[in-house]
Image (tube, rainbow over all chains, first blue to last red; front, side):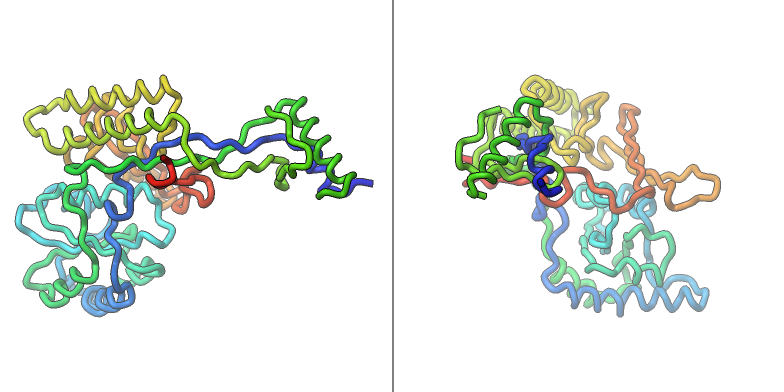
Amino acid sequence: MNSLKQTQRASAQRKQVYKPILDNPYTDEAHLWPRVSDPALVAELTRRHVIAPLAHARSMALAPPLDVQVGFNQVVEYLETAPAGTRALLFACTRDGAPAVLFAQLPVLARVSACEVTLVQLPRGSNAVLGDCCEGHDGLLLVVENAKLDGQFAARLRECAGEQNAAPWLKFAESRLGVLATSVPLTKKAAAKTGAANAGEKASGKC
Amino acid sequence: MAKPKKGKKVNIDAHGTILIPVPKSIPNREHLQRLNYLYQLSTFQTMEIQQDKANSLARMYAKNLDLIQKKTKCGLTPGLKRTMCKKCHRTLIPTKTVKHRIVNNSRRGCKSNDILMAECVCGAVKRFPVGRNPSYETYCERDGNLHLLSAGRER
């Protein structure tokens, strides 16, 4: 009597196939979010110099001590209309299960923006921490670098955050080719043959 | 389908799918490289050529890309297709050809009804319901589905 597994094997319905596919040459990690060299230090610096003051001001119902833009719409609007020569730090919680399509726009936007933006990826779990200091943040917080922000903190953060490729479109990037694993249905005849082959192997004790 | 060789074990998973090892080379590599070149040309034209307000050349390259992709039946990842307008064939670059906003038209302003809208300068709008399932991944983005082959391997 055949087991359930044997029955499943004998009735192969589909076959795995690999389809060639072209990926976006600019979605490489080097081209998108720069790699943070010391995530723990970045998280601690951010908590001490940005999140704690904002959370304190919020709890006391005071005006925020820093010039910040919170949430996707505010951040995008600021980057689109920012005057030239300004500097900003953009914190993003990219690893907390946020939609990839939301964050995919920001590195390109940071490059084409008139203001100089430093992208800082926060480590996993920072989404909840950001929630302490602001509401509706979408995992995004932009801090404008001005007299209200500690200059040393900004410089240290810029060191840790890693450098972003300024204009990747100026240099030809190698094509990112791959294969996509998918499956196609087998014809009844082919399925029967596969089943017979497996059954034969079982009988001769090869499996 | 080719007849299975005698004595060769056929791997079948629990869903009844015959498993095949990942190929070491890519068929139609030339077509894919041509598409890649056209995409980068289109992006470069959009980024750097400021005089051409209508992005004529960039759109022509992107249209060629679209036609060749359909003719040769080559696949493009969703991440690449999302950066191109289906209507006017512009490469979608924030501040230059596209504007991104999150809108929520629900009465209660529920977070799950957030929609990311990407509006091209031609008026075409792409809508992504990001609030419904924030951890949504396309089939390509899921682990184990896309096998990128490096330049050394693909030759």
